[in-house]
Length: 156
Ligand SMILES: [Zn+2]
Image (tube, helix red, strand yellow):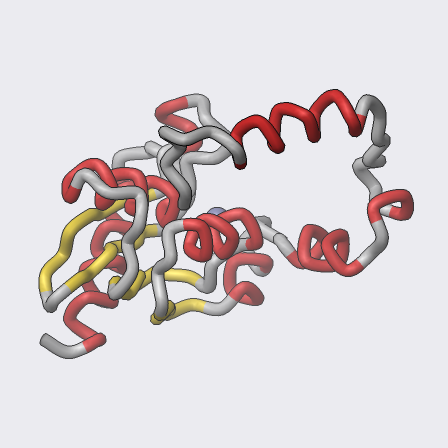
């Protein structure tokens, strides 16, 4: 099936989610081997979860459906260009390709402006609006080293 078929499914989910008042007008599907393995739409309002964006929801559903946290070989189709959080989730899921419809500028025009977050990422931590302060580095890093040395760990 063509990209447009899956992209239209993502757009249909964006409309269904919007009409049911579950959240903003955003939808997404994860596709592997020509089949949809996970669908999602924005459920921020319905779930009271600020991270319940369409792409994150679709990734969670896809990973649960296939029983894997690694979605390598997948493509995500999103009704709108992914925000920084969703873009990061796509990377963590090892999804190799993104196809999107509306642009960030379209979302910004209705009040969903993630440009500030993209700008924030370009600044050094101490210069960001949400100030990042560091403390107890060695104590936290010790847990990381223990994990790295753990024989039964699951790398990802
Ligand atoms: Zn997002």
